[in-house]
Image (cartoon, rainbow, N blue to C red; front, top):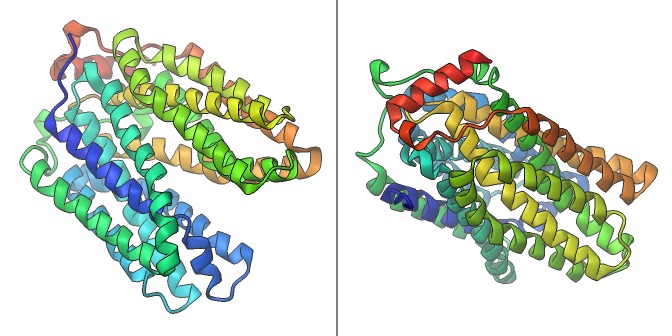
Length: 409
């Protein structure tokens, strides 16, 4: 029987969709807005890197804040802080002001992300974590697809308009979430009701270590190389227009969206490992194949497969991390480490793949990216299954089982 998801999960999904739409609205405008201050391409790109850098640097602090003040408070402050920074960005009068405002936005983004995933873990029944994770990821993905479409029209009005709309979207997400989540989740749980799990203890669990490596590979492949290298390959190697680059990114997103919910259901019924292992295999082969093809239509087909691979991985991997933490624990630092692995991959991936492309060509760059997924696959093959048996899916038994699993490593 399919377990019904709590109302609060749907609240988190809707809020994620609203936030992602806003982020997608801003994405096309940000480089051009930075260039409007008479800076070069490198300086314009630095605005995007700074946001990711602040997310990475603040993640450990964000995890501790969740443990000290509770998810809902950190979630709300993160959304409000991000809204304030984006609203201020619309009124930036210099490049340096723009840098400061975007850096503050990275802090708010980290607070929102870590606390939202922690809320998802605490609220979703253990036997429905894969489905809940898939829904949350789908909300973000659909928002990221819809956002740029609206952003392109707003840029025609003003380069500052997208930032004001994004700020309004963040405030709307806050207005939706806070009343509906208040009372269900609040401050820190009493000490006698909570199982403590630090990053160090979680890192002793083989499945969590495998998730860190896979998260790094996902950041390298999806958030890094896909955005940084695919457009260049389409234009310079396949000799196609930027329109084809947009099509490649779009079909990747389509393959991802088509797989997320199905992967989550499989993870809840068959276990976390099967979809993750299948996804890493598909992702490795499809990504390596991208750099070998010379036919645009084959390139699009491989992009779809790469999206499918990513969609297979994410819900099951997030559910596995949730299994390691358990419903009764606030694993803020554990989730922060999981997020940081993806952020590091997103930073290192484009730099490493770009350097390989310059020295040895695009084929080797995509091949190295595929090998990163193979490395994650080796970790997952050896990792134990974490899906709780049905008879152990009550919070107390699950927490005890989680403690035993970590202690046994």
